[in-house]
Length: 196
Image (cartoon, rainbow, N blue to C red):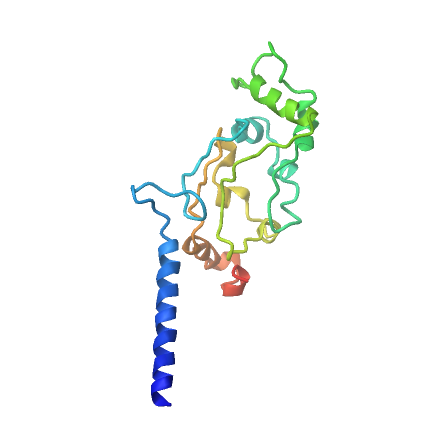
């Protein structure tokens, strides 16, 4: 009986060790060639090319369009939405995109807006490339942060100065926990807040 318990304990300990090593190795996200692997978490500096070169610098910085105008679910949903083409077309039915029109604020945008209009008119969607990714076991709630007054720039950086979206923060657990630990934020440190 004692031997059977010892074998079970050894098997359990070995299984836990294997799972721990697997988990920790999956958190390192480094390619063998030394470059960062894109995918989930720790992608600080990741700035993929998009199917349409959308400039937050132009829309948010120059034209002062509020984040919530395009990302209109962010105050009501755990996830921030990618704007629908109908949202884009609220302005771009009237703004630029016709050959020969002068570029706005130095941006040569007519070709990009034509792509947008063509997709809209053809009933297609744009296959945007996700920039900010978290592991499946992490539950980040945009609504909870926005309604508490956390600005978009806190996590996303100075988005109004980005001609191309870049992941500003590493979005690691330590980075999030450091913010939650600030007394003025009055944020939960309970593991189940983010891990459900």
